[in-house]
Length: 262
Image 1 (cartoon, rainbow, N blue to C red):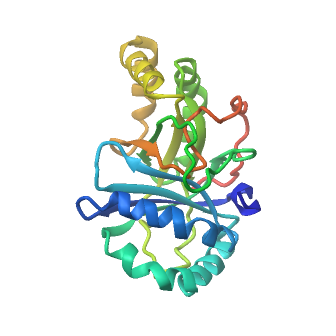
Image 2: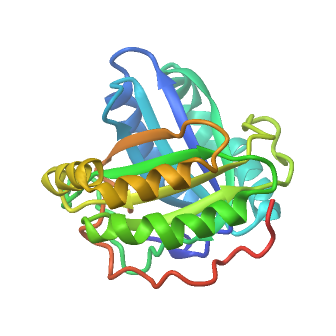
């Protein structure tokens, strides 16, 4: 794993691709062979790649940068470089839509230190990852995120979820317009991991049947600007984020890394 894989991520792309029927395995194979180390060599962090459990034709991945200036520089180097030029036709042939992209900034950062990326052909243990994309009213990001940390997160972690990180919308304009992003859509996004599907199922049952947990979630969701989008994600073979199984004990909930509300 290169040093860039563990570099601090200040800006994160959450990318959801709609693929042509039956093409996900083909894209994942190509991505994990050609597009991981080639992007990391340019200072890009690749914390996670996932299959969408609910949709066989969806591929979800995360791409991180130190800041917006680093993003513009690295993306230009990659998309004008030899690796993308050599493989873009094969990659694009698998896709129907690649424009569902959220540009985010850190609230509670991923901790990637010491996580191992599997070499080609090797399998590492992997648990499922859940994500929640929460639409926000303008200016409410800090309040909603703090309320999640204080009211919802402790109850969910008590039932077996491991928060991997949380993010809010990056307000800066897209500085690499060749790749569209969903601008002017403030969101709060969290990722949680589980040791295995059995642990995930127990968490689901608990949050649905425990009255206090259900009430805390309902009261928190009342502050959102619409219903959240839930993602049920299966890490691919070379994803760094692989559920809670390789994640150290959770960091204390405290003052988040971001200081400017949207």
